[in-house]
Length: 92
Image 1: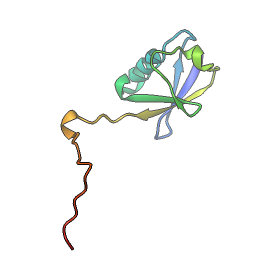
Image 2 (image 1 turned 45 degrees about the vertical axis):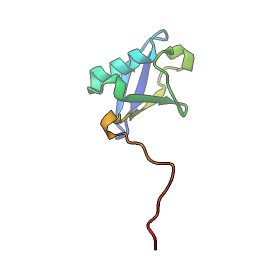
Image 3 (image 1 turned 120 degrees about the vertical axis):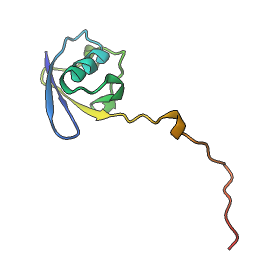
């Protein structure tokens, strides 16, 4: 069945998917067309993020359905830092 994936820029990508395809496979098809690695993709349908291990049919997609693609920006471990739970203020 043909479905559409809409990017944040409004571009629509048409994909041919099977009901038994995992969402992971749908992301691979997006990568083939757009060059975006699956690990950086988040597919949204009906306001909910689609899980990689679920099947297309689990979401009851119909031909012509539109998924929304958002990019997941990963934070490198070196950019993560801890903060103290105690706030300190300089004397006024």
